[in-house]
Amino acid sequence: MMGSMAGRRLGKTLCIAAVSFLLGACGGTGNNEQKTYIYVANSGIDTVETFAASDNGTVASVDNVATGGNPMVVAGDTELVFVANAIASSISRFSVDTDGKLSSLGADTLTGRDPEGMILHPTGKFLYVAAAFQSSDGNRVYQYKVNRAPASLTYIDNVQADGLDPNIPVGMAFDPAGKYLYVTNHAGGTISGYAIDNGTGALSPLSAGGSPFPVAASFPQPEGIVSVKKTGGSFLYVADESFDALIHRYRISPDNGALTYVDNVTMAIGPPDMLAVNPAGTLLFALSEPSGSVSVYSIADSGSLALAQQVRGNNLLNPESAMTDPDGKFLYVADSKVEATQRIPGEVFVYAIDGSQLSFVKSFPTGDGPFSLVVIRK
Image (cartoon, rainbow, N blue to C red; front, side, top):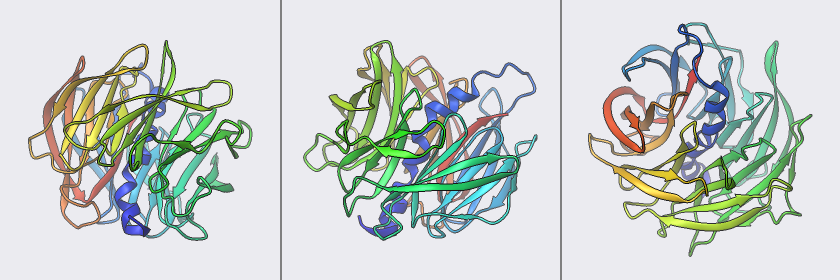
């Protein structure tokens, strides 16, 4: 699983690691004129498609814009959308117009080689990118300041992921307070933790807290990662796509960001690749590419997981990433059908969320290789 091709398969998880923060920042509508937009990165044809979603789950195409080579991860908020391009090793920047369409903000920003992960800080002030390729400018987490007027990125610094080689950093998630950043190291089988400087956005390894943190499995391959705040504390959930097929749970220390291993659940239907949570933090969605499925887990106040449903069928074949709308009424799942780097049209699946159950609404076509998506309320 070395190199760029392996990394491009892994990149889907990074966008989704930001789900709980992005949705929490959007909040409820509060305005009847606000609309929900879905931005889908099509890695096979180097585009980002914009779709408008209605309150009943129907979706309409709005626009299609070009990106750099092989767009893998998309992240953003109501003002700006960023796209990490794996082959080009760059970040495309767009402003979000009032009608949801994207407008290019000029030349791409170069970043580390083979960017497979990207996450926007909940304050909107900082952007972090995981460069997965094992090279002098890869295997690192790059840090940028987000400038709003005029919109641009200012390079801050980069840190080596875990200090190991090979490592392949892919999944990214903040703790619920936005004080710490956690990165899954797919080849290293660990989780790197970093403290975030609130003023500059710079990262400092949590070496005193025990980083890198081990993943308890026979041959761990951690990928998707999300965090949730519950009455029982703050928890980090990690998808392990190895043969063990586990979702691991860690308790996050509010004092120093250290992770304490709690327990795990086994996904009998197939190994998990990507994780997402609903805005309320009561549901966790686990995608499995090998089984073409979505598993739904209820999250107790204690942070424990209980399987609620397993969803397959309706020609869902290769789920790559998922995210709910800001109200938690619908789940959108990007399905590349095959390996996302191939030039085959994909689909986005829409599921209605009722309690802890999903019901299929419809699917709509996208361009070739839909690999990542982000949902924004504007």
